[in-house]
Every structure is written in C-alpha cells, then in structure tokens.
Image (cartoon, rainbow, N blue to C red):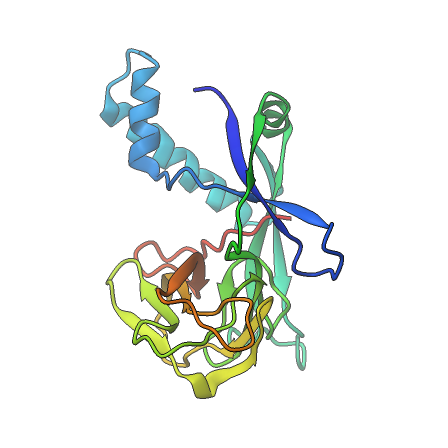
Length: 252
C-alpha cells in the first residue's frame, strides 16, 4: 500500500487574513479491525485468520491492562501514557467529576511512515465545510470525549446551523444501537460559522457516537443553500458499553 494523503485548500477560519490557507484532508474512508485482518492476510503470512485475530486481540488486551496498571507503553507505533482529569475534592476520587484517559503520541514507526507519505494538494475547494477540533468544555479535553449535560464545542468552518429544511440541526447517532438523538436549538450557546457550542444531551448512554452538523448556511447575509450539507465527527461518551473500556481516541 503506497502512502498518499489528499487534501483541499481552504480558508483558515481562525484568522482574518484571506491569504492564510490550510489543507483539509480528503478522507479515504473508515478502517476497522476486520479490514486490518484482510490486509494482513493479503501479505501472505501463512497464518490463518483465526490466529491473526487471536494475536491482535491478545495484544490489545495486554496493552490496555498495562496502561490501566500505571505503565507507560511503547509499541514502536505509539507511546501511550495514562492520565487523570478533574479536580480532586476532599482527597476523594469522584467518577462524576474525575476521569481516566490515555494519551497517544506517535512513535518511530509512524514517523517513518510519515516520512514516506506523499501529500497531494487537489486545489481549491470553495466554501468547504469542515471540523478542525472539538472540546469538552467541562474538562478541557480535546480527544473527542463528551460529557452529558455539559458544554461541548466544535471548531471549523461553515458550521453555523441555520435553515428551514427538516434535516438541519445537530444530531448524535449511537453507532452500536443506531439510536438518534437531536440537540434542541435551545441548547445552543454559540452558533457561529467557525464555532458551535451546545449542551450535550443529559440522557446519552455511554458509547461511541457520530456527531453530525447539518446546515444551509452560506457566506451571505440573506441567502441560504438550497440543499443542506453535513459534516460528521466521532465522539465518545463515558465507556464503551460493549467492551467496558474507555476508548476515547486521545492524541497529543
């Protein structure tokens, strides 16, 4: 597999200089463990899929176990460190205010792959809608974690939620159950083109969610897009109900 990342040029939404440009990744899709297993089998290792699945599952479980016992883990692909969040009150750990997360930092193998990666700039993409980062305002975390009932911020471009199409709004889809939760407009705090701040629904069960922002906004004082457009990012509430693990994708 040849390393190649494609991107579109877009305005930098956090500066006022029209010449300030950034590159927005053109995503190639989503890869899960099953796709990784197929790719490993294509390398003609001589191993059965059942063996590969067993080894990978064991590896992941052992890494998680080391981390949750206070070890820093270096796999060559990443360096992982367990950390805590929240203020400790009266010397007691409070799961409602405190949390454990893991910081992942790229290591030698990833740096080598980065050095061998070609970046293809596909040119200008007019009025591109994108998300650059998110933030759980209750603890300052920018790893994609979300706390129900607390402020959550999304940063990017063309994010302002506006329009009369019924699909317009902010929604959260549980990837395990497919249950859809919409965020009421009364829960919005900031509704700007480059920043959205809203209160996360207080009744969200733990799990992984697709956060989707749909809008008819365009850079005009009066006009709206005829067809709504959307942008999606993944967020995690609490612990994964399927595994019991805190699988928030933290990268520093």
